[in-house]
Image 1 (cartoon, rainbow, N blue to C red):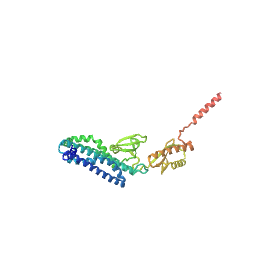
Image 2 (cartoon, rainbow, N blue to C red; image 1 turned 90 degrees about the horizontal axis):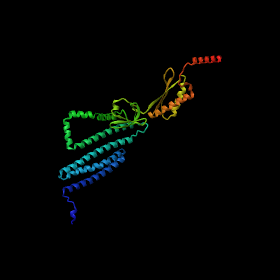
Image 3 (cartoon, helix red, strand yellow; image 1 turned 135 degrees about the vertical axis):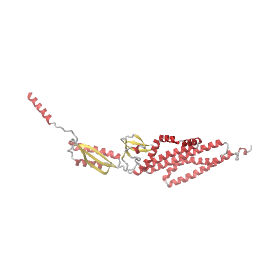
Image 4 (cartoon, rainbow, N blue to C red; image 1 turned 90 degrees about the vertical axis):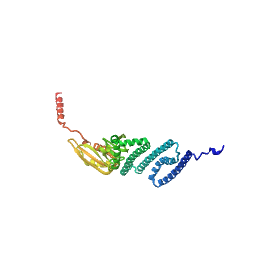
Length: 367
């Protein structure tokens, strides 16, 4: 048997096509290898780009070979046409999916890079929270838009879908209105997300009061906000809520906050020793930031006076702890030093006591 019988016929169209595909894949692998080495060296000099290179590498491993195979289809045989067109269409859809994946990974890498280089676990984290909020909301919105566009482009490669789209555009009056009404919540949240990213009524790690609940903004997605309540519950709030409904933001411009303690005492309580005790408690407490420390009588009634202690802290968590310390310390001081001036009910019991005394004396005489 002649060895030439085992050799493929390079003049056959399918053999040439197979060789072209193999060469294209080999060139694609070489190109990807060179590009990967270049990007990794570039990332060493630019640390912020290292995350993007690492995350984009996997989609690129699919994109480069798919582009090479798609280019190799120019050398594909003409027959059978249906099989060739089907394979080319399948590779094209895969390429669209890989490109969509690549863009989503790049946006995610950019978000992760900004988050890593701008941590919010610092005392003065206003700038970091502002950047993280903008990047997170805009990146989630961009991811949704890219995925929707990728699916739309992939569907438009089918002739039937293109014809359906043309017919839909031709009768877009009532249909467009119906689709717009159905998509209003989704579009409203997307627009609200862009508004929040630009105007920033809330940011990541902001302390907010929503529906009467105190909590921190834990996560901002493209459609909703996760608020971590103080007792570790999670409140899920639509983005539009923060555009259309009033709410409290305790860290809008700064995390510094004033805390107050209200106590009732008798009118006879001397205030100067109480002010001295407040000063001692605040100076001994690490939660006090040294800005504000005031004790004032802010209200009174026919029974007692209301004293308010006002203290400052760097954030709301420390303010809560400082308020508890001051409240406990002032009550303990008054109970220890001036127990007679704690709030109490007063009444004239002189008359009833005299009547009881007269009755006791009468009984003794009768006995």
